[in-house]
Length: 486
Length: 142
Image (cartoon, rainbow over the protein chains, first blue to last red):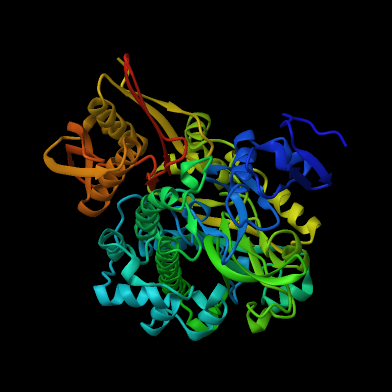
């Protein structure tokens, strides 16, 4: 099999879409690396990303493989698109395997509307959404959480929001983990993180975060689509954001703590950003409880944003909630570590699965898949880059065998943000997209340039790889109609 | 002498900052980081924050210094443009830093941000001291 593009020395191709980083690639590797890529995506693979896959493979207690999804690109510590599972007793927990934006994630909302229902109304909708959901650097929420409210958010996640009236019970049953990671402990969240979290509930943030109005352009799997309540031509809505300053501060605080723990526990690290501690140590558990708190904050945040967006639709469409049917299809986390049970070497094992820019993708029959989707598998939501299609997939059995129940999380960058700004002009991108019938709102055109479609890999190429590998199967394709950029 | 230079990186911003002393290089690193977010050339330094930190080594001290500035930016809503590190000194097993940062209140009408720096990473982190001066290397998450 010939491949074009740069050859990364030492990589072995073991199947059509599977590349192995062999044990000898770097000293100290405990398991091989596995990178899931097509020929086309291989040409964009960076050597530094492969090095990072190998670095992760050196961490104590890692199981089976250090993995990277087809959207993988270079990160810090772990690659973006990296997945690794560590033995819950003998392994480690590492904040670098989660990232700063803890539980950055995506939620998809379906509707009773079709594309033509919003003809001529898209700009008004986007303007109202842009006002209802504060976005961009320095934007603040109208909500100010009290200290006791913050503590409830850190421990309960989305449930707190629903109990406050920001949503309905069905929102919880249609969300990964019902919008909560157990173990959230406010005592492990610093005063600084709380101070950053207090004024930011219901805000989008900046960078690659967005709200997107979409429609179902194609159905690939009618059975799963029916279970997800998705139909051809239907209007859908997507929210992509995370834990904001609270999550960034939790990661900063605990990384600092864990860089010291590395010396204490005499762990040899190839990159300081991989700072970690034995899973059952005080330091690792403190981080895990703080991370769970930030993840719960992120789910609360997306729940509140969804509530505000539903209000905008009700006003702008002059319809009530029942008529609109803006029901949550699902919500997935992209940046988390979770304690899960997986089959390893013929037996069941408790592992901490780290997903850094990767989505959980549990198959049909798994007890953690919501009842409504138990027969088809967990919805896997893959946002496209701005102006390109997003995909809904469903988790499949091979995910449990090859990636600890994980799939890709998006398109994956191929151009730096500064490179994007040199190459593209925000105003021009905005005009081009408008020509394709896609409206964009942003605090400033430069954020449009750095997220231009050309700076990402093709989302369809990425999705096709996980589909071919049987990690997750394509269910529906969603085309954008309008975007509010963070 | 050049104060700092950016290095290409796919998802994040990576830069080197230079100085005759560690104090100067740390101040220039702060300037580079804020210039990742916004052009600081027309920020009027009217608010001063004094900062004191300690860390087990210079690399951790550098991360702490930049992280503290991000925290103050977000919580106090001040856009910083001028940095002076008074002293970096070793006391016992710890390194101490004392500094000030000056800037103006965040005003979304005036301040146009290119991007937001979320956090300071330990990835490819370095503080290099030679007879020529001090070079620091930083990757921030944006």
